[in-house]
Length: 395
Ligand code: HEM
Image (tube, rainbow, N blue to C red; front, side):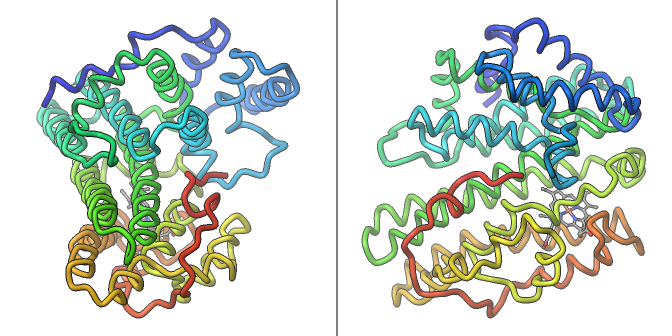
């Protein structure tokens, strides 16, 4: 399967010189140590790029500097992860009428391929030992393998491994992947292992989006189109399983390595993730137990909006369809999400024993409460508020 590692963004057209220079600077600077006046200058550069004409250079400068904006009210998690760049890439695919699921897989592929190259280059030079580094690469290659087997849309006869090979010939796509790679993944610390953490978070975010997207499509197909349901629930299951494959790779980050950069990440907690909470809403329905959490972050307000809560969850639609095949396919596809929550709680316990979470919760205990998702309410409409329910969400 290593053949599909060829989609390395490095072979495409370079960025404009000013952007390439800034990207290099941001990739080599531990951002937590950036002097105040330098951060302010980057915020001003963002304002200038936003006010300037829509050139290629300005578009990329906006992506590179958004994180530093003092004008925009950006939740800390989004400043840290730079998910606006993922949002930009997916919006570009939408403009070109490309399939969001395929686009997500390709981005995941590019990010993981880049991470493998980084790990291979850095092997043994930093905190990670040679064996840990080799094991991490093996586990990341398992992500690529799993990606290669993900089911594609109805008009595709090939496997997704072939999709990666084809994408290699699409100059616009390869350039956009290069832009994502160069405009995101900046570390706050000088620790090599933060790359693994940061890219894992980004990979999970893409997967939260793919799970949600496929879940919406599956919900719509129930009672209308069996073949479409089979395809979408297969995509849902594959993306859910991938979350666990990513977590397996992340386990190569020991608690000691994690603690080496945790402080630099500040209050950037994925408890602020809009994609995650929307995914849960679409799959399970509204989780009343989290009302207090949602209420702490203004940008999470849509999760509790009566409009979105009026939609049927995939679980309610699948279990209420009176069709054992539909229900069983949902249950099989959902099981990996349950496993993911359990493993995530395990992360909390292993990495932050008796410590509060960076999102202001009690930490692992918070995660434990939500491993089970039984009995949540959802509505009965299945028409789509397309924008919020099926697009990549970021702030
Ligand atoms: C060392 C690895 C990790 C540890 C120790 C960890 C720990 C935690 C903790 C303690 C919380 C509770 C909220 C808080 O106060 O911050 C949390 C929430 C969360 N984390 Fe992680 N996490 C890890 C990796 C990840 C990764 C890679 C992702 C992928 C995006 C992720 C996604 C989330 C999400 C979505 C929530 C909110 C969960 C909910 O509301 O049910 N975590 N995490």
